[in-house]
Length: 209
View 1: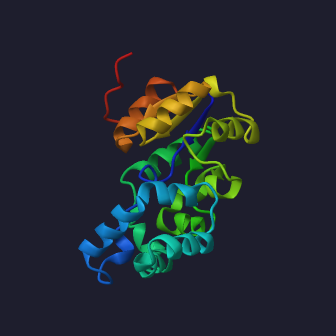
View 2: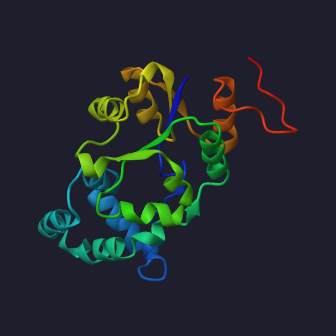
């Protein structure tokens, strides 16, 4: 293996969509907003390149009672990023120190992506990041994985891809990446050690092969 690609949300930086509403909107109202608009699908459109302005227009035509909630979410998006995922920054640092090309592939709105690195500075140590909202393609679309390989000159068969979504892991594997499911930084480190990309830390036991 010669390179590593990491998802960002809940791999390097924590994401909590309720964060922007804390102290601003009752939780039951937030739940109603998320349920009515199918927030996972709604947000996927943002990840795939839809602007927040267009999203607001569409929401005003379908669920006008939730426009204020959307405005809160966008205005306070930074509060959805409570900080780094524990241990992941050290994994990135150790990969960089060993000279392993390390990239990011994230489903993220182009308009809010600038808030990622302040919340998790390790993102700034990656060689480059492919942001779905900037290219108009979002995981698990196989085209975004092909674009990833092309843009960063990666051989999928020699590249580890880590993501916290089983669907995205399966999609990456179908394109030929050595895809692993992220559950925590310690497990990711072990996955990278077994592939020779990291060495066991002092005092740890190397995983069996």
